[in-house]
Amino acid sequence: MIICLACYEERLASVFENAQEYRFFDVHENGEIYPAGHLSLPLRDTADRTSAILACKVSFLICGAICGQTRKAMQHAGLSIASFIKGSVEEVLEALRQDALHTLAMPGCRGCCRDRCKGFSSAVV
Figure 1 (cartoon, rainbow, N blue to C red):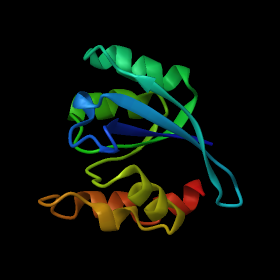
Figure 2 (cartoon, rainbow, N blue to C red):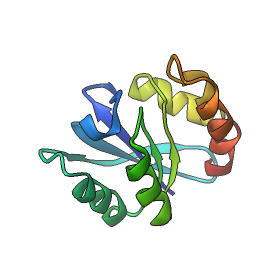
Figure 3 (cartoon, one colour):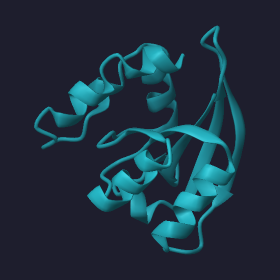
Figure 4 (cartoon, rainbow, N blue to C red):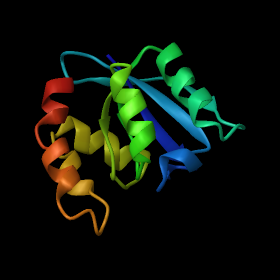
């Protein structure tokens, strides 16, 4: 399974639409996670970004805040999303391995993402 982290430098972008690059990782059934490439994002067009993720065969997106309309379009296309997550790339990957993405919920999230993320990474790994 291919996952995508929407990044700004070495961290998740606080807002999906402001990500500078997508980093892709291949998650194996045994829990191992391997780098699978990246895509620089010079354009800010949300439709282009969505198309890029889908063209790379991504199944699961991990990102910071994301616009509701963008989320709906991606989910309609079959993408699973864990949003309102913060942290470095390594912190996020480790939380994914430990089924603990909810521990990286952004401040002010009010728990909405905790319910979406809890148990989700165990379904991925």
